[in-house]
Image 1 (cartoon, helix red, strand yellow):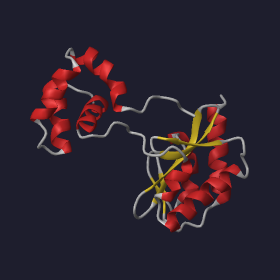
Image 2 (cartoon, rainbow, N blue to C red):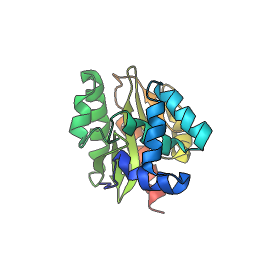
Image 3 (cartoon, rainbow, N blue to C red):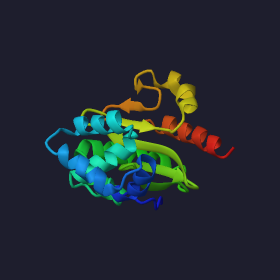
Length: 185
């Protein structure tokens, strides 16, 4: 599993180096912006100090009391936050894939469940209120399978399915097979 430091403070050395001021300076700037909304605070840092989105987000969120971007330690914790219908569908998606590819590891990355192989992401799933998205981490794989997904909401990087989707095991397994072939090159 990825052991990258998910704390907001992990960005502080890079912020100091890139923008040439100590964190005390940036905390004073944030204190002046305390009554502003999140988008306004982000925009202020980006427009006035040329902050990257990641650095602005780390500083703003830390200033608002969020010390870590990590919300889930395990896939089980993630599944508990879903609507029962969504949780059932998401579990079925992963089960259909891991039944054919048991060597894949289910992990949490970017606060979403992902299957990985040798440290490379193969497919991830995300649940919104009215749908579920899955992403094979490859525009080429999505393009290859688009003709088979006419009844799904296919975008550049994701495929959307209804919360109660009847999982198409053959499609998911074929997508994963193609993605594994890509990462094995």
